[in-house]
Amino acid sequence: MMRLTMPMIGGITALMAVGIVDAYFVGQIGLHELAALGFVLPVTHGVNSIGLGLGMAISVLVSRYFGEHKTALAARLITDGRLLVMIIGITLQIALYFSMTALFRTMGADATVQALISEFMVLWLPAVPVMLLTLTGNTTLRAIGSPAKSAMILTLLAVINAALDPLFIFGYGVIPGVGIGGAALATSVAWLITFGISDYMLGVQEKLILRGKFQLHTLRANWRQLATLGIPAILANFMTPLAAAVLTAMVATFGAEAVAGFAVATRIEALCLLVVFALSSTLPMFIGQNIGAGHADRARQALYGAIRFSLILQVAIWLLMLASATALTSLFNSNNQVIAIASHYLWVVPLSHGAQAVAILVMVSLNVIKRPKTALLTTILRLLLLNLPLAYLGGQIAGVTGLFCGFTVGNLISGLLAWRILNRVWREESDRNFTG
Image (cartoon, rainbow, N blue to C red; front, side):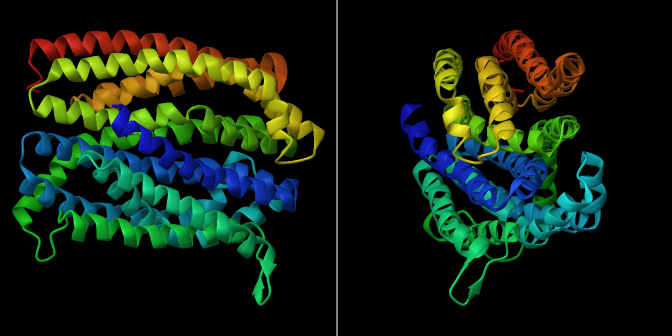
């Protein structure tokens, strides 16, 4: 687990750096631009979640095929899966283009912020299909036991984005700056380049993309398998950005400064959960390959060990946030209200990150043992039935800080419930010897 996860810590750090670098440079332009980025965040994360859900479905099957030494079946599945991902990406791109005005108006963006959001979206949307293909390709590389290649691609993505951000946002020489749209353009170019590298690694180096005609009967069978696992996985992953969108709308009722502070805090928060995200990307592959090879006990040991480790780590990170939140948030914007709101978030919400880690690791593990509906139910319980209602109640009682406290309580309760669900499901699957 250490060998698999360590490269992904670097890779996911790099992926998170894309959002952090965007927030830093956009924050230098102005408050409304930073608020616009806050509204855009749930949508970009939503698209990422769809890619991760599709990648989860592909990787669950691929990891088991590799555990059973059925490489040819894995290659066919990967090839058929990429066609499905491309179709979904183009469909999503078109749907977002025609619905974005109504979507952001519903989230609470005013006319000034909406204009800035549009500048970002028109330059970000063209990259959606290649973004999904790259995300699923990276997940596939991890599923076959090549996390270092996946991490390298994500690191390159961050480096390219960081290099192009100031160039496209502020301009240099003959290159004109395009403001917040420059952040979107930098990200789109970075995804396009890394897609080419990911495609080369899977297709040429690993020989897992079959060039030639599709076999219709096999295509249908593979798509059916992917839909069975993928739809619940996509929905489960999509709950997080959906909840973030609703939470952003709640925060927006407290003003543009609140949205800007929330945008800064959530980007720093992503780093707090870095190791958990890395574990959630490698643990399913480890479990899948070991179950496929008939070593369920080894899979269980890794899962429960990862949960214990995450609980201890997240308590330590929360203590660190208590001491450093204000200093960190002041790097992004000088507005005192923005800094105060971001600091309050980072003092309160990370207290529950240990419980959130339990819920995340339980969700991805349920997917890999082919219990995607239970994983979806766990996510709905956490976000829609606990976190958001309690956040709303807290906001009504004690303003924006109360909102953050309510969200924190929801995380704590859902972590306990996820733990109980995991223990029950694992016993059931053990009785069936993981044949389901």
